[in-house]
Length: 327
Image (cartoon, rainbow, N blue to C red; front, side, top):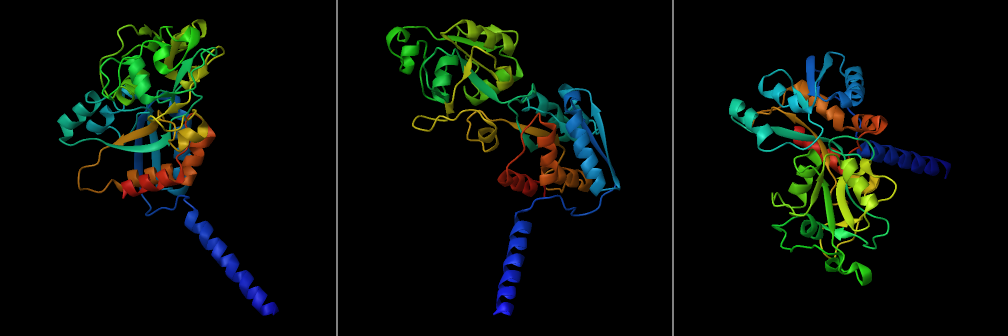
């Protein structure tokens, strides 16, 4: 009887260890690599790049990570001038402008790799975008089609102009109250993201929308105007405004912007943090670049993302998807 119990216990222990190992995603080198991994990016990301570099070099002692952090506008150039291996853009590509020069030189497209989720609290170019209203506004939430109706004029989503709060279902004193749409400059990174995601790349904004030089100024204007609405990165939230839950479509649940909804992508305006690399079609990646990016999307690299705090880590499914993309 005792032997049988010990046998069952050992079997359970082995099964438990196997399950734990199967679920682990710590970095294990596929091969030992040599040489420099050259990263170009923004000074704002110096802390995260150093954490990644230190962790990678501890596991790959023959490799060295070097960083040229001159700002996001110069990152893509490092790839088509062969001055760098990884362009840490920290935001979406400005298409077609940023891809165009690379394609002219290389005659094929850039490859992008997701390395984190955008964060909610830090002032980063790829910060997650919220939609703010005055606390006195009773609207419970909005769909992307309704946002297109408020801020746009072409309506590729199939909706229509929405210019009063009554058209969104509010009643009483709100029924005829105009929607006072406010936004950061339409050529800002945040507005370009909003235009592509919500307006489905339409350039036809609401002609009455008021532009502000900064996102903070647009949000401050909402705090002064109960009938106003603005979009801006969540980090620009302040007293006197509230962020609305959003839904991807009619009949779908309204989802508030939280750490969890940004990571699992249930929040409709969740954003990615990407790097760009030069990968010739049909050819494998440079081994040292592949190994470094495998480290970045492993549990170890994503723990560094969480520790640095500007961005949010990838969930396990996305880690696996990106790792497969690198093979």
